[in-house]
Length: 278
Image (cartoon, rainbow, N blue to C red):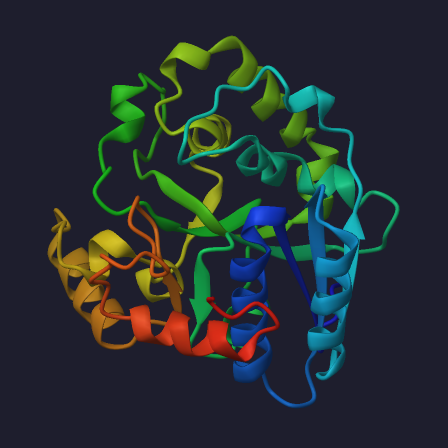
């Protein structure tokens, strides 16, 4: 069984995204309970040594650790990319394999464009049952599996920006290998790249979290309606009380033209990191 007092958080970043990674980490550290230990793991895509030193100093001020995972990126070289979804997005697919030399049984993966407003402990110990992960439905793409012609019992499609992963089950069933194979052989069909590939393999095998735990921009900006009554209620709840704000979409809170309702939260946190906006 995993340790409920120690939380494993994993993110992936290159040098350009380090300021956003630092903002995410600081938000988690400031909202966690005082006796909780957070162990951060960063999938390192050529982050500069000076940036690592600055991140280390920031994290060391709290009850937390940080480790960097050096990986061979060659297996991701053939994956389709875009200006919004870089190759680093695919790294989350292989997280359990990156941790094979540890005794970690559970981890939470978080995109860098997220800030925590509530303690991450509130979802850390959630019972996954026989599922391989827990996630939030992707806002606005409720028919995505149908469009991909995936034969599934449930056609709910998850957003991969927040995932609670059962490391042992994932590794035992070689999910990473299955997802990467699907991604490499179906590149023309991958509109949402790694997320499409993850859903293609893990449909029907994930637990649905309340949308406040991945409060995507479409939800918070009121740009998408949920097709069900309970979904509409949960969207309202997420807007009024988000736990993890995900600045998904093209316009990020560090962009001057952002009108995101929680932009100030990001900016205030960013100023407290070693990487303030110049």
